[in-house]
Length: 322
Image (cartoon, rainbow, N blue to C red; front, side, top):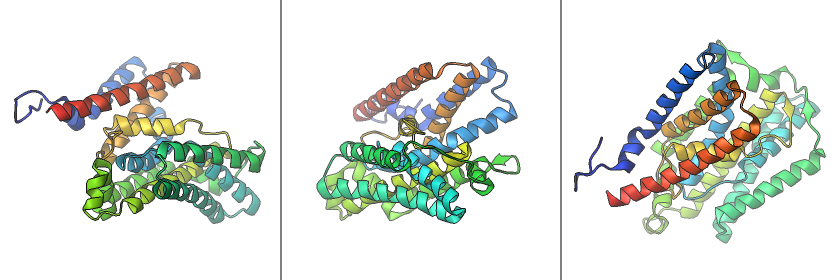
């Protein structure tokens, strides 16, 4: 274990940030593999990969928001709105390209709207995105009347159900999004600006960083990620469902926090976030294999959110003491 250079004491925050998430994942993986013999089957591993795609894509958007010191509560409703409108478009026009553009465009508009409201009126992101969540839900329910749109065609289905070799096609989409997000955060000026804004907004502004544009970009990116996730999910279900994906944003936020991104902003890596997403994925998968009912699963995931936040607080306290 690593010791503080100044007083020789163990620094929990430093240890957890470096190794904690990987040790937790490894421990869960071993326990679940021993507990249930079906866990490591090829079919189940592919199922886990498919199941984490939507949450991981959403988590990439949430991570940028959280690094900037914000949060997006509208993600799941924007996902449902964009995904359902994409499904409607492919049924109405038969044009896959148009359907994808509609889904991405609607989600980007919501994300940009969140960003504009937050930076223009200085509204707390919690309130702004909560309002957007209600707008997105009300809009798609009004448009569809609660109706689902099914049988979306082979081309649209391939996005969420297809394979390239033994690997599900959505996994390639997820990998591409992870690489793009990693590049933005690690190699671009806007990525460095996000860490600076989340770490100390006043100092970032004093150093010449455009704080408003940085926050706007993060919100717009989060909206776009919800759109991509929505298209993948509706394709996987072969149905545009306006009531789908309720509370998915909580899974995405939990994945980000478990991965070590602080709720106070300024820290976080994409590598840790994908591990956090995989932890949620294997927990859900294991509970399904054990036939644990959906209500109890919500209890477990709710406790996981609480533990993740407590860990975040304790890590920050440990850093301040170390």
